[in-house]
Image: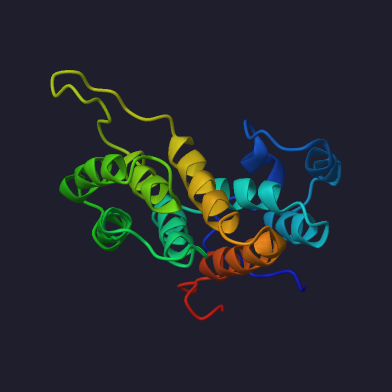
Length: 194
C-alpha cells in the first residue's frame, strides 16, 4: 500500500489527531516517530490494527466526510437485510451530509432511536446528530456536543458494520471499509471501492 494523498485530512500530524483517542498500545507506539497522518493510517492497516485505524480515520476526517463514511459502511454491512428503520436512519444521515442544515441534523436522532441504537445505521444517524448544534432534548437547554463526539459514533457505525455477518470475514470487512474511508479522505466518494 502506497502512502495516499489524504487531501480531506487537514491535520497532517498523526499525534495531533490521536490526542484524546483511546488506542491500543501498539498503535500508540507507532506515534513515537511522529508520523504523518497518511503514513500512520498505512502502518495501522499493514499491522492489521483495524479498530485503531477506524478510530483514527473517524477522528481525522471532517464531519461530513466521516458521517458519509459511516453511512456507506452501514449500507454495505454484511447483514441479511436492512430494516425499514435502518434504511430511514441512513437516508436521513445522508440527507444531512448532502445538506448539513440544522433541520436535517435534528431529524437524525428520532431515526437513530427507531433503529434502537443497535445497528451501524443508527450510529451513522447519531454521528450526524452529534456533528454540531444543540443536542439537548429540552428546547430551553442548549447543550453543544463535544467536538469529538461525532467521531465516536462514526467509529461505532463502522465497527458494527465490519463485525456483522460471518466471523471469518470480519478482517475483509474492515479492509474494505478502511479502503472506502481512505478513498473519501483522498477526495473520492468511497463508492468505487468494492
